[in-house]
Length: 524
Image (cartoon, rainbow, N blue to C red; front, side):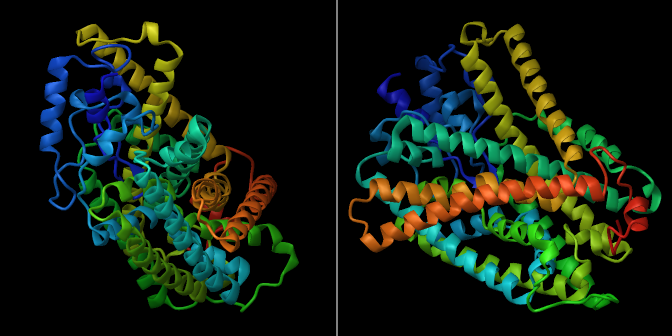
């Protein structure tokens, strides 16, 4: 790869919004047109130079991503990191202030997980619940500060770090990068399954009055029909528009839920406690902690955000402001939900709303939020699968701009999306429990990306770290690993228990069934 090509191909800073990584273009499927290795000719380089010059900023509301045929290498577009030239580090654009970055982080982290917080309060009580929301907020702040310090050290040593995997490479070489990328992709996969389940449940609640006897798996199958055509869109250029849609829908959902709960007041029998000391609910208590961890997850995209800032050293300001804003929002929905529902709180809390027009609107907004998130997460995973296919058999990869080659690439993209959506359908109906899926995501990739990786990296690369902080980071690593293993085992046991208590995989789980078995105090 030529020096100039390396510089240009790495010039795209892939911002991630609302938990979605808005990687450039259609991915490897179109990025390998000139040759099997992604190298372009002189004409292609001139086009890429033109695209770099035309690149718009988030502040101006212009597309973040360029045309896929003019983008860089397939590794860059897949977000996999890879070898880059240090010279590019001084040429990349700086387009975002810390205030804009803070807004992006709020949009990114405040996802569907916030709707599980009232159920968390039910399992642990007022004092532990609110205390953990506040404590883990400061833990997330410390994690963000560590990532900033690691990035600044890489910057000082002329090591280009634009993705989370690049920090793994900076600290532990190729092995570190592979481990970080593997954990991140696994985490995205689990979150995609959560989105499929959330989309099916919200659709079931919207149509409860006409389809109350329809099974959850039937709505899940309908989700496939809705999502599959959108999954064929290989170029996600206007990420800012998707950010607006995602932000408005989730904020609207939360506001409607809070307003309707307050309007209706506490349900009959909505008992609350300061501290839930019941020993029979040990497993839900453990899951509650990891659900709060999940609500602050998003560190995997912090490197992209830092790289896009005009003043990267101001990133801690964005971390503080966004995290405190989220903490206030989480305390609001958790407190209102628990006060009004008490021991009847379920996840997502929208399923507990009274049967009326506003409950349907809230679930329509929730469906819109998870649909957009689902589509973009699928885009990321599809690019990863395409990249894996190309790596396994580069000799037979369809290259060039012929009609036959383009058709083959489209077929492979379509096949990949079918596999991923089909897998999400199977897994979401095998484990059709919202809280448990969120806990599984948090116990695997959430804890690792938020606590384990930043502490491992800072110990390795910061020679000036104090002994006290070194011991603190080592303690966090040990505790996080143990907690992750315990939560993972606990979640598996909890899923198995729910299979016994509620029903086996692919059981009907209709609205009528949920109401008849007291599984929901609300719509569905």
